[in-house]
Amino acid sequence: MNIARRQMLGGILLFTSAIVAMLWANSPMRESYAAISHIDALKGTAIFLFFMSIGIELRHEITHGSLSKPRQAVVPIFAAIGGMAVPVILYSIVNFGVPSARGWGVPMSTDIAFALGVLAIAGRWLPKQVRTFVMTVAVVDDSLTILMIAIFFASSFHTLSLASLGGVLVGLLVPAVKKLQKRLDPAVAYVILPLFALLSAGVNLSKLVTATNASPLITVGIIVAMMVGKPLGVLGTTWIVTKSKLGALPHQVTWPRLRRVGLLFGMCFTVAMLMSELSFGDSEGEHSLANVSVLIASAAMALLAIAALSLKTKHLHEH
Image (cartoon, rainbow, N blue to C red):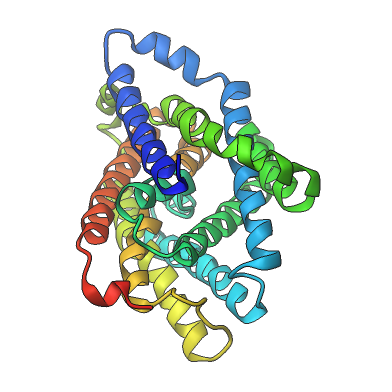
């Protein structure tokens, strides 16, 4: 089976698993879902193997591909930083001076698994360099988010944070794992990512009844930060870096293509859920409201991205 078809089927399985997780978490069997979704060892193994496969791919791009030139590699790094800073600023402005301001970290990180899943379904026509750009931005902001957790939430440093960072580092730094890629890629597409989505995507909507006293500014802040701040931060920083000649876009990564894939960066699902737990874990109402807000914004951005990527025009196919 060719790579494009495998990625498309993997993306379909990923979103199917997420839908099953939502239905399961809100069914009469919700207790069984809660029990299995809290098995950190299972989730940690899945996310470690996924991020290891990402690390292997990044290693190839850094040594032989579109990131081998420093001026091109620097752009997604700065884009990731901008894509983290702008959402934090917007959320903090919306929640300035109120207790819910502590949720500033929730909209910070792109969900790389779901972003690549959307690309696999609706963006197969895009050149590989665009996928690499998206992947690099997402990996950098995931890694920096993990660093933020280590600094600001050290007492709550999470198993999944270690699994994410460890997987990337192993894939990047251990040459021997390159031999595993051909076996690992199908496993990631068909088993590992769908399993992770199944264990992570179930949000129990009944818990919203506990959110009656939570500030609606949480929802406003998260939605504005994710749907406006993330794309604006990534694309705005990319524009500044390229216009100032500090960096250059890789070949075939054009602005018409970037404007469409920019919507993907507003999908902040799984890492945002972790940040929600760390920020609002002592308040079930705020925690539930933050999770549902992340779910709404992520779903909206996924649909917008699929629509944008499906509207192919002639100039987007030009080299």
